[in-house]
Image (cartoon, rainbow, N blue to C red; front, top):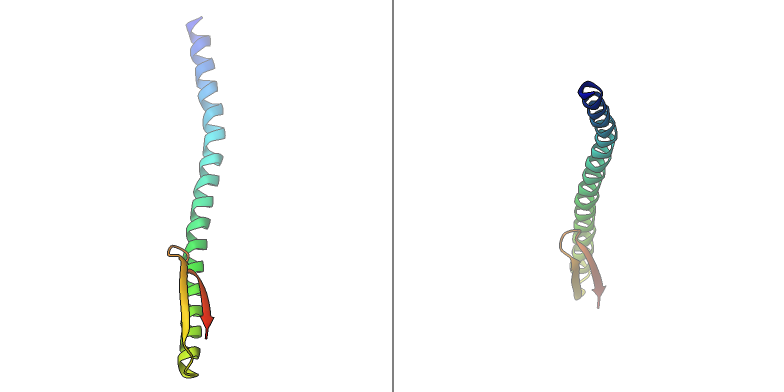
Length: 80
């Protein structure tokens, strides 16, 4: 009887692993995508903001910049 009970526990562990591994891969993939999204958003927002500032300075315009999110670099830019 013990042998059958032990065999059932091994089967349960096998089912747990077969469900756990794809879920772990999915979570890891989502984390990697989130990191890339934040990094790319920050990079492109920084480049765009620098181009706007350079353009305003070249035209002698005053401007205001409000940084909404430091992590992604989202901002508002108003040339006056």
